[in-house]
Length: 362
Image 1 (cartoon, rainbow, N blue to C red):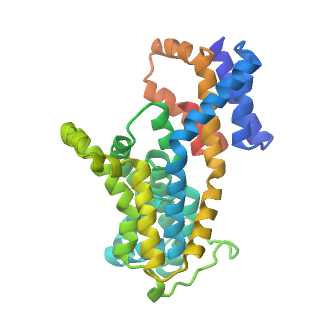
Image 2 (cartoon, rainbow, N blue to C red):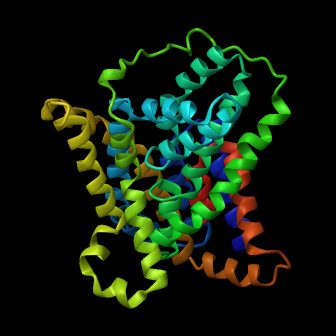
Image 3 (spheres, rainbow, N blue to C red):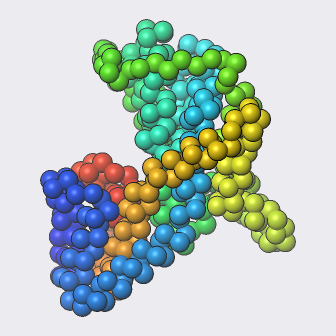
């Protein structure tokens, strides 16, 4: 019976989001409450489970996601993403332009959520397609693959960060292992897949392609752009590598443990960006703070979706459904990795949200 209830809950989630167009946040809360009722929980107990799940999930993630959004905003408004793209294209040349775009998508995608990274880079893809006469999809797929993989695989992005918290995994190690898996995934889904679509002739709508003019002298240097984008990743990866290679050293150096923590690493990167893209370029601090405030409002709904996913998890746990599924799944002659991947892929294909699909599968 609990399996039937959980599948009914997932179907309800599909219907609420896809057919009734209710936000993922409210849909997850409705699903959580419905699954709790079907499992025989008292309404007051369900409410307590939901609030517990909301609070425990938000407490671990809020600062990481907010600082990540601020860092992405700094890279976007300063023109750093544009600078990285053109320098890499110049470095690799026309023959390896896909590799340059893939690396750009990866570097920009590390600190920026998918939607923001896509909006920043897609005008550059349109411009490159127009100037090189190469098929649009040939250039666009490597970028989309890199952004999508970083968004789905790597902290500090919402879904992988939330899953790491749910499973009590080390975020720095999650990043390290995620990069190892991410690189071949991007190669296959980007340059690999795009070769099947080279004959597709696509022309962007004039409403979509509004080229933004950058004055080179006003752009930050490539070094400043890379330092800001990569500083949190370097700190987090360094922490993971030292922790794995020499746990005693990692435990003794308290300062390094502190600065390699994902929250602090992103916090440091934001202030590096404020200095390099703002103070150094004599921008008003008040203007920068308005911009950063706007970036946090953009991730508010993402935080609520993740929190409601935590509430769904808590209801499954408190109702005994999670334990039941664990026992039943133990008897399946199927890899648990394949099983959870299938659930996540099905939900992602149905409703489009990486965050919702990952949280529900987790």
